Length: 236
Image (cartoon, rainbow, N blue to C red; front, side):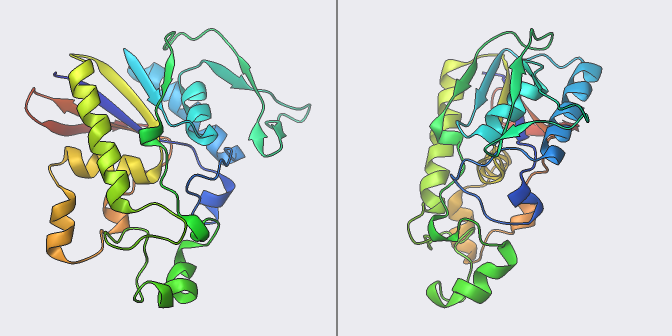
């Protein structure tokens, strides 16, 4: 199973630009996010990257990023040359792709974690406003804290491990694109680099958000030698 994994965090949304937690709320790309996906498309073509299989989160910001980056769709533009949005979602038209003509497989395991009542809250306001509910900590990257009405980090970690095991069993010597979100892509990076959730628990500290948070609209590439994955380079 010497697969090559291409990890892609979706293009930005307006909430990302405002540093707000989004979670499972189905926010669409912003104009900046559209541009990031289109630039990535150009870089994929320039680098002549080809994919055998593509997986995406069901949330529109990840799915639309995959459509744009893979040249399977173009934004519709108004007379002033700006992308058209309807009810907060990008208006797309399908085209014939020169990059990837296969299916985009939707997988719930790689959608973002639910942040419950913290959805929409700015990241730097979580502790000042809600820290009293969570021992003065942020439950976003703390292993044993669960946002009210949300999903635990441990539960999402298990989903990502299950997804990776699925890839290893069902794919061999393939180039696989995974279009997802900051949380799942961050956990994928964490796992592929040899860490487990127990490493975080044993250290009795929060995961450093900046340590594993991936950039938007970039391909982070990990190659396997059959026993372990290694980060080789980034495209975008």
